[in-house]
Length: 106
Image (cartoon, rainbow, N blue to C red; front, side, top):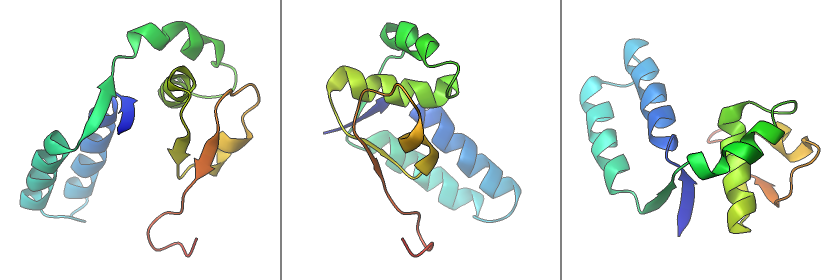
């Protein structure tokens, strides 16, 4: 099963909001995507138990990115990301797999 900090929903909805505002996608498509997001089989983990580790990573990455790193570390899981920069952060104690973004040829 996939897992992410519970803030993942807010981050995704924020992106869709910007896309609707920029007229990149219609509002009805974004609304349907919100429904799909609710149904996504994703374990949404509370970030509160991860706060100490998130704070430890403060000099290298944002708290938002650190939440994903800390969760992957806690679960002994591979962190999947399109952000290659995360794979170069010192002090990260989980495997990181950089995946390509749609349309970028990776």
